[in-house]
Length: 121
Image 1: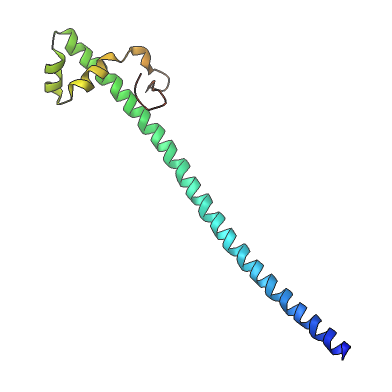
Image 2 (image 1 turned 180 degrees about the vertical axis):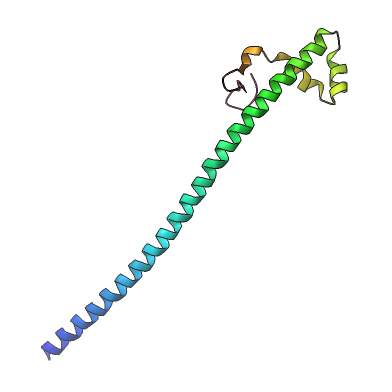
């Protein structure tokens, strides 16, 4: 009887080991699939970050050009309020642009210096 019980236990052990291997392989496939999705999402995010940097540089360059044009208006004795009305901008935005210093625009990257909150200095 002991031999039969030992064979049954060995057989159960082998069957359990086979099931465990199959389950591990399935878990490995699921993990690999999750890793692939994570890598793809990270790659998309990195591309989006590059696009955002390029867009921010373009926006900063345009803001610098706009600031120069507004300063020209102000130098021609156009009031801030009138410049805002002419350009269909808020007076606050006109004042912010007028306060931009030429040093705020980096000529190598054409980006306006900003503080950590994203506001122009």
